[in-house]
Image (cartoon, rainbow, N blue to C red; front, side, top):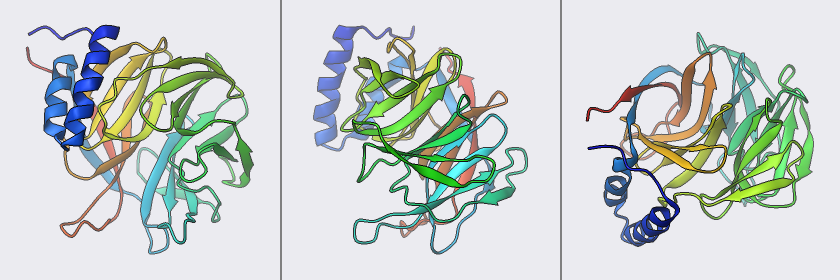
Amino acid sequence: IPMKTMTPELKEQLNIQMKELAKAKNWRGIEELMLPFSKTTGLCTTRCQLYTDEKFPVLQGGGTDGKYLYFAHMTWVHDGVQTGIICKYDPETGKLIGKSEEMPIDHANDITYNEKKDVLVITHNAPNRQLISYVNPHTLEYLGTHDIGYPIYCMSYNEKRDQYIVGLSGGMDFAKTDGEFAKITDYVSVDNKYVTQGMATDDDFIYFVLHRLPCITKYDWEGNFVEYIPLDRKSDEPENIMFLNGKIYLGFNVWDKDKKITAPELVEVVLKKNEI
């Protein structure tokens, strides 16, 4: 069966169908609608456990500067307030090589690296969805917070283009911006009503990692839907996605049988072509 091509008309039709299935919490039904747009499956392998402690048990955003991996480790929300730390890891060994002081970064839903400014950029998400924060990747020093003027939940910077892609709060639509977050183009997504998480980009494509039935959705830089990539790990919760040295990494929150978070994990994903 050849892989289907997404047209604007088909996207509109699917979004209506998936909205109805989501009302019934029929996530399997949504996946069945998406599978004809899949040519690969993501095979997940745990590389190591990541840092955790009683104060910062929750993994959220993650990103890379092309050499190291960075993750936000967060408190639970207390009286509407959530804080966290940024941890720096060696991607080959998974060894923790740096840990920041506690920072006012809210939910810290995503992390990207701006090469031109040599800073990590953190998406706050809830409850202050217009805020981003900057962190020095070398010292892990908190450099301050900036209001970009509109709400987002994730972002990824591309040095070649000097542009960001940002996930717009309230759904799965996204936008292309310049290097200072001025919007260039808004894009309509294929909205499967899964839980939005982090994102990554390369020079050609845009990738969002999603949770319900964990998957990755792929677009080109003109906002055209390219592919649905189901992950073979259906348990636990992927929080972020990044590309480094030809490898795909995800940070997972791991849940025990009582639905309590245990130590988060660094997971490598290998794409396997689906059999036709």
